[in-house]
Image 1: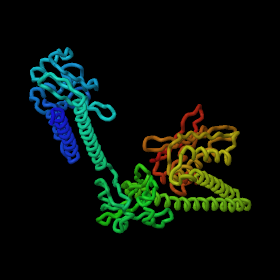
Image 2: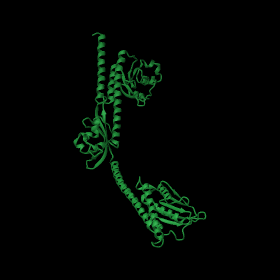
Image 3: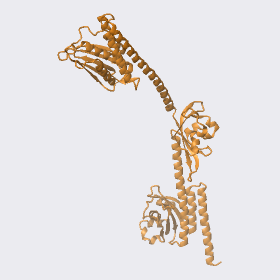
Image 4: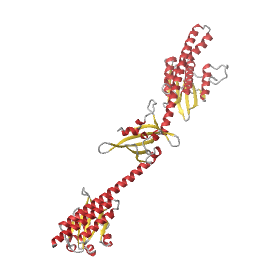
Length: 533
């Protein structure tokens, strides 16, 4: 065999060894070997192929410096010198290759003016020539550099450059695969952590209803199968239609999602736990699809809504009971007003037949009070039409005042003024007693406070005083005689109106004070009722 044939045979063997090294490195990576182990196979192949040394440096995560990766034949001192080198045009060829993204070839370090600052470091380590090729991804991102070092000056030929490029491309595949895998593992770890700490149960099922992934909370709800696809699991879940009919398994959230539906915000289920207790849950589900749009599984989410559901059920029951009570109360109020109207008619007929003056006066007084009580009852009924339990005291007193003015007050002789602070809620029972007291005191003032020649004003004021309520009724009339208005035993001569007032004050648990304020020379009368809210 001539020299040319021998050289060709040697070139073939070198190419075969290079291909074997590439294949082995890729197989190692696929088999789970570490990145350094696979890259070491490449740099050893490079060193053998060119009869020198070889190294791979990698870009740091921040893209500013180089991290020494693996090497074949280089001393430890050179590794330390390169590790951490800033990416740029000075010091080392690998730094310039990473910086520029272009191959850097130094055929003779001692004669290349570009390495004046780093020449000594290269020569001191026995490096007379080096070729550094950037390691790039398919999109052009620089990952590092593959460098071949020689102890004697030399320049690469076309076959040499082709061999370096093949090694560099293989290194790029290995590095990019490793980065992708590390990113995948990091994302997987973060996703697993998020899933495990979510306050809801989450699971992914395949098209057969088998669990492929779930978190801690979901494991408390299911044993690894979609409830609609597993007889044992399905028996622990119950859902109902609005009309009370049970929901069939084929219409459970997961089953609907496998048919392509998105079940959000979800269906409410009563779930029976292993210890036999039942809890309300809300189950949402959505289909998972591949790139072609085909359903590959389903993701389901279970939320604990037991406290919310039971509170809503309790509220619904309470509202239903309140509605029933409201209907009864309004019916009673309606009947009371009808009774007042009937009594009003009977007394009116009786008044026409009474001839004795004293008796007629007593009947007329009774007639007047029946009118007043009916008026109070009507205003109370209107005020509590929307809310049976409470009402706004100011609105109630304003309407009562309007009714009293229209029914009993001669505007040429008297003016009724209501001064009440809005926004003070009052139970209906309290409002009823207070309304009767106001009615009696106003009618009493109309009857006794103003003479035939006098015109006056009656002021009704209502206000909150801490935990108490204060009602003040003041007139600017002639004033009460001594001893009038005080509580007296039955039969002692006290009028029917004041007897009723004192009884209502006791019913409210309050205190009634009476005095004669000086109002421009006219003493008048003031009633101050204080009672707890």
